[in-house]
Length: 432
Ligand code: 0X9
Ligand code: ZN
Image (tube, rainbow, N blue to C red):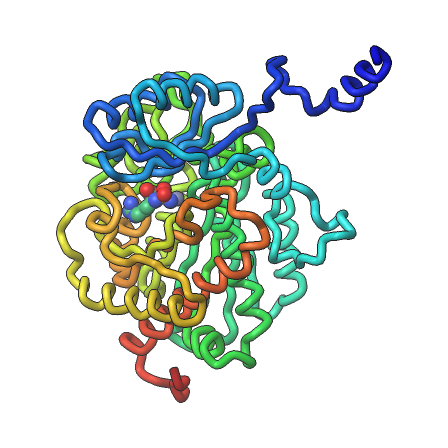
């Protein structure tokens, strides 16, 4: 009997939790709905008291009554956090019980896994892989793809933009797409890769992408926050900001989507370096922000459409997010977002909300979309990709194709509209 018991313990050593308790606790995501002011205040303090990561909303100050909060709770804080919620009768449920497994699944190098039938574009990739991919794409398409170095990150990683250009028409217009401003939103860089693959594979085969590329060059920045993205692969999967070191605090990182010069650091951002929505020392204080802003300033006469890709919550947002005021072409932007959302519903049976950022989610100043809009790029959108919170930032790789195709549909619908509204027809417009 004793031998059997020892054998059992030895066989299960790896399954025993480090704490020595018998029940295995794992990293999990909770969905919590506060119903009273007191409960809201308790939740606002949770992230400062315990090691947790707020998934939704982006910062504790946006937590309000009767609105779902998604909270990532690592195994070592699990007991304390659930105790606290129970003591204050705060309604909560486990949204994801197996966050560790999902993280492991997403970082596994599938190319060496013979059981995996997924292609390169149906997986998440490390920063190094993405740099290699960009190089290869340029080498394989020397006539149409160029890699442009637009600057470097605070840890001195290069910021590369791909330029897709199918012809040299005089006075050619362009669109811009950036991905990966927020490090943990992995489906965002996956979308930039997906868009490039679609453009290169379906040019001259698919009418819509052909019409877009005939009339516009495309600038694509697959990872705007390389330091943060790298950090999510090596150290902390839940990291959001960049990795710059603050002079006046031990806390690291600026929220690059609060660092642009659009009502910079007013309500909806924070001047406290330890928060997730820290706006930085001054607008464009961060090299990543500066590189993008400089590039767009230089190219503002040609760039007509600005797209920035985030996750999650399934929304198509447009200016303003930095004020409750309406943008001057609000009707146009609303119509375009509505048409894009309708197409997503029709083709993919998925719901995307749409509207101005401030009215649809929250006031959030210093964002790249508002800044690009004020620069004169009158068609400016933020896409929040899948999902609604079932997996949140840990969207399994198997969901990449649908999430990216939905966003691709929206991007193409909007780009075609921009061409229709601003450019005299040079070739027959496609039947929509
Ligand atoms: O808060 C943000 O930066 C974005 N949401 S996220 O959950 N991906 O962090 C929304 C950005 C909307 N646009 C602006 N705030 N300008
Ligand atoms: Zn984001």
